[in-house]
Image (tube, rainbow, N blue to C red):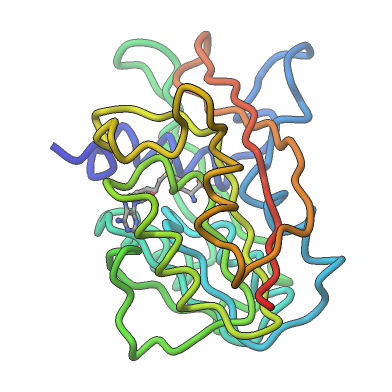
Length: 244
Ligand SMILES: C[S@@+](CC[C@H](N)C(=O)[O-])C[C@H]1O[C@@H](n2cnc3c(N)ncnc32)[C@H](O)[C@@H]1O
């Protein structure tokens, strides 16, 4: 079973992408700086890159980073393997708002409607169901590619990196962000990019160089609410790369 096709994960990701601070963390204590990760993946990097023509969000889920990219790019594509995530992103694109069922405990949940910032030009993006390991050549190439929390969710991460290398234009940028949670459930251990003595970032660098150069790397915390009293707090490593 693909967990990303379940109702539970759909609402968890809608909340992660579109919930208010209060929806996501209803306490006065807790890691407030871990909220709004899908927006921060863009806002922490794009000011230093500037405006671009075409951008791609691989593993876009329900689409928040894709919409955020439209502030910086004229043509933005979001691709995800989950048809229900893409349907939710397209529904947000159509209506500019979405219904989220926020899980409180057991079968008790709260339904809210949350709106996308009206300043976002939703007509600038398109969403597709597809495999990030095999992006159709019809999509062309991109000035900017984001892959957030994807590399440790695919069966062949090295293949994802090679595909990204192919898809990015000369002088274009790539943002890779991930907590590197390597799990057999998604990636056979022989394909993990971390080994006994090798860190994931170093292995990524080996695969991307010499075509892409590492510009910078930083820690990006994020919080996923499971229910009112249980949260996943993670720290992604976000790295920025430039194609030579
Ligand atoms: C951990 S979620 C991260 C989603 C989003 N980028 C974020 O940061 O919230 C991983 C996403 O990758 C998608 N995914 C997994 N394998 C994929 C593949 N081969 N191609 C495209 N998307 C994939 C899943 O459906 C899911 O939406």
